[in-house]
Image (tube, rainbow, N blue to C red; front, side, top):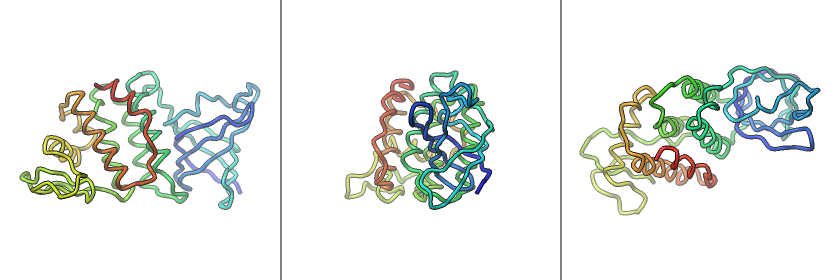
Length: 241
């Protein structure tokens, strides 16, 4: 049956000589794998440049719940993140986020609030002219709430340690090794209560930014055991160091 929905591109792989298989996060069906034929055939009118991570498309698909791979009938571009792909720093962020999302978004069921968060975040990054060096950190922290692993905020400044295993701030370091020291916990506390507009007011050195990012990735790994190794993090460290 034909269905219309909006989809955010997470990843694509080649399929045969002219087709591709694209992984979408859709507004109405959650994560879906869609076969697109004739992608590299000039006569088809379908351009591979429009099927890169973070592009947002209006889709018409032949959807069948029992089918692992859906078929595309038609599409149009809802948002083309031109500024993301014209800025090497933004494109590195997009590559990193698409790798994370491909790994952690597994549900094949609708979550409109999550989809709207992803769409609004992509549009924000695309339109932001400056002050986005901390965007990927703020995005990952915001995403935790939609994945069911949101940490508790610090309610007392004297709680200097952050317990990665239990997701809360403590007065004393826990007995297990999965926690971060006060200098990292302080920045996490600021990010946990910051909006995207606020992150420009969190000054960080490149080294500190990398430490905070690695701490968040570790937190994800503890609470989402299926998280794969994030290969693009090395490039991200270099770009924002």
